[in-house]
Image (tube, rainbow, N blue to C red; front, side):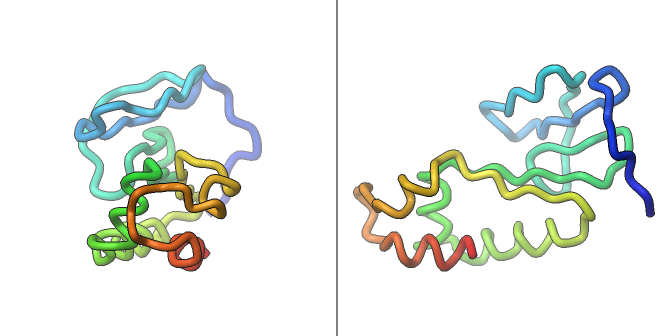
Length: 113
């Protein structure tokens, strides 16, 4: 399967999962709302791309108490040639571990790696 090396924003339509309360801004791509089996965002033009997005709070919850869901989401991403696990935090924020959750920065980093 060969993917195009260049994409034009007018030739790609991104599907934003209807369950996302605050969908990712994928400008300048065209977007539509739809229900996805895997990930939060997809490319309707080729169905080879998936993005799974986690806020830092969601990530902490996944590492601590909802690990099975996180592992399942990551395993489903592996079925796509182009996949992104997008964490809404910087690596420095994760390393510092300045949050109320009892999960350690090391546990979060280990989960991401």
